[in-house]
Image (cartoon, rainbow, N blue to C red; front, side, top):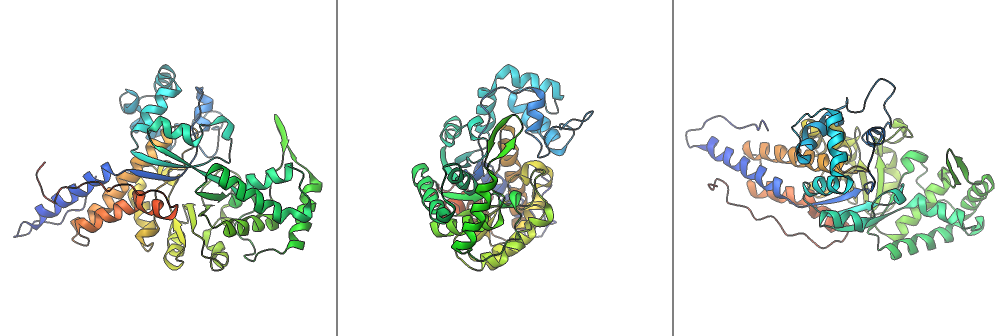
Length: 415
């Protein structure tokens, strides 16, 4: 991994540092993970067009181009092909033929088995009918599944139920509480970044303001979708604020999409610094998801607000293992290590789980081993930090059962 090892020293310090760095790499390779934000995988076989749509936030590539000619496309051919029994860099047609030969179930089993994930915390708010449930995903991986409730989905269900505008705040609070209890959810999530942006008034909206906004939404009715039934879609900033404050009242961790996403994103409106005044008004844990290219801003927010946490999420697999070290190091420049978490944000295809875990382990091992090799950190501190980021922080914030630490050898012990 190109570790930075100090030059020779009279007392053999270089040799000791190299052994310590190797120890860190070995520990990180074996760490169990809590994937604190992800989605299910498809349960049916995909043709080439379907597969390519799921490996790009931009969907299908333009005519004459392919999503295999992207960083993630090349990473799939390099790192996922061997898991399916192919040589690295297998051509796309060969890779997809092997996928079809194995079938979706075996492909999913093989790729999830490589990740070392002990728990999946699954957002079920998008296309859940086409994906595995948290329990199904966990069963394939021999892990445990937990659910995240999407706030906008709850509000849209309330609208579809025929609730009155005057009772919207109360109906939202009741529906959210029921959803959390019925699904035994460990947190909630908002996609305000996609729908209205993060430049929202931070204050809790009053009941009259909410009632007027709800009345306008109900009067407009559900919107049409090509090839689908009309459905309610929340895009009102006042009602979004009401949802966020209802989530604060529930008290579970609130996941907030930040930065990189699909074409609905307006990047200038999803900078997490826009949330600063809202963050200052409460102390419920807020989990800033993905964050790239605002990961340094998110790290600052985590450094100055006791309840703010961050991850790199889908940036890990879209940027790939080769860039994971640099991006993780940038996120870790000022963020307290107790505020960094691992997630994949994998959706649809198991290749994304595999690449995210690989990129995280590569980047984390390289980052920590460099600090140890430089003499900046002890092996014990590096191991402790690795365990915090991989699973300890998520277990604490989401109140999950802790995962046992990985046993380690003393630094320098011969294998």
